[in-house]
Length: 363
Image (cartoon, rainbow, N blue to C red; front, side, top):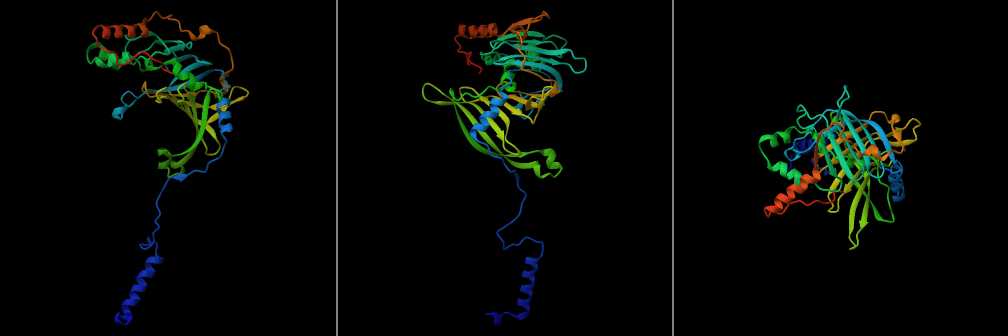
């Protein structure tokens, strides 16, 4: 067969194949090809007991008082791919276990209050002191922690013109906040192996940091490993209900990076991301996250809280009950959400219309 092919053509074929194999070109005959992929980060190991100890370490903080920088993000229009971001504002927060909190948000520089709010564990009170509308919508709001007020929001959403529309657009975004939302974010509840069942699994998540990508850093696109510690409540009917999920970042060391809190239907109530840890109090006795990002999907908002000075944070003090009951010393118009909810339900019942949303547990 070779005798039928001119010798010059054989030499030419050998030269071409040699050039392909020896050049920097991709080998068309090789099954291998190189392409950019996410960097797989090396992970550390820990036992379930180690993870539980980390949660319980954070739970040792029974009270906390701190100056913080806060940034509010309104996700009401997230379904349209939009969000409203508000400027960073200073504030002060006081929390005490199990569910007491006082929160104050200030206007930068002049330090006059925008919002003050408290929760004594049962009732919450919110004073809207600056509304961006000349005081037209300043209110003193009273409500119950365990009641679902979705029906009130439905009522506002149904109105599309006049003063109600203006109210929807201009009422201060901070009126969405409920002080009890922050309690579990700032004071992690301890584990309870007698009441709950705990299971550990591993998870690898693809993560992108666009700032690092622009710098062509290999850490701009990574595969990061996590431990997931799930807390289940065993109901009387034998069903397991997921109550909390803890995420532990396994890169560098194993640290608590995220906490998700679920309702009885398995929907997320709070999604809390914890930043890198630092030394807290004057003597550096505590090592805690320096930043907390709280997302409330149902209320459609996100709040970023960053400690101004971790060394100045006060931990472990006892506060009187009156510290968590806000008084209406500004003589603002009082809006009792429980009364408003009852009025709407009575109106719907009088017309034979069944309310879409009943009052229920928020936690």
